[in-house]
Image (cartoon, rainbow, N blue to C red; front, side):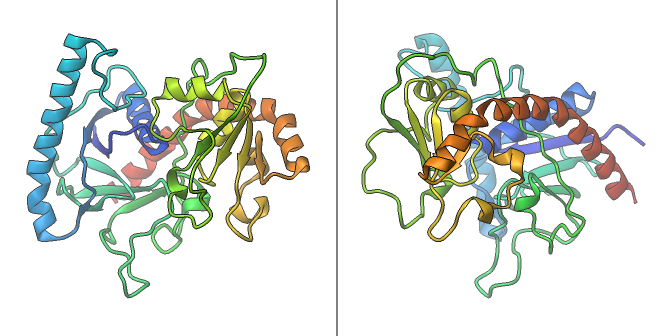
Length: 318
């Protein structure tokens, strides 16, 4: 079999999904695969007009990225700082990647359609699949011949991925995400992210919302605050805040508790679901176990990617 080239499409933000997309890139490269990553700003390409508009949007976006990087280099990060996070060094961004008949293109679940017109498509469900037509049951924007993986079993759609292929590749820079403040802490910080549409969000927050901060700024805030309160029930930043020394509290959706979120025991280490003292005590007690779990996650990610390569070869060569 000829060496397969992979192209990964990614948004370019500070969110966790971007980190795992780059982690896949990193490990594919470490395993000797020919892999490129490309960025875009729009993720619905399932109509003719959106397909036509994809190229100019893509070009404008990449010109902006290039200008921003030049300005940051010339003026320094203190005077000009663009808002994009690159979780690994030496990322080979590709403006117009060549996609041949043997190229496997990996799209996160938010990409509707096939903007790179790939013959071999992997859809990676990094969150719940919400790509349904208004009629209710029909998934739009994906093709039946696509190969599906879920980042976690909890995010899987059995209609799309009945074999429940899982590609779990978290990467946690534990030289960055760590507790440095062992003294006094004050105040609260908040995580909103995927909880932005919740009806129970407060009108104002009595602390900093960390959603759009850089990773280093997040860690700084986590090491200053006593409490980190999250309205996103699925973000890894809740656990990361605990590792940094916060009392980490996830606010369950109305009528729900820890048991409603399909977590295995280790996924809930370091985090309280709700404000009950028993939950808070559990979060503090299991903080070290949360750190140990993330150490193991980093070492297991490369094994997950090896399995991913084998699965892709079997599927697309059959």
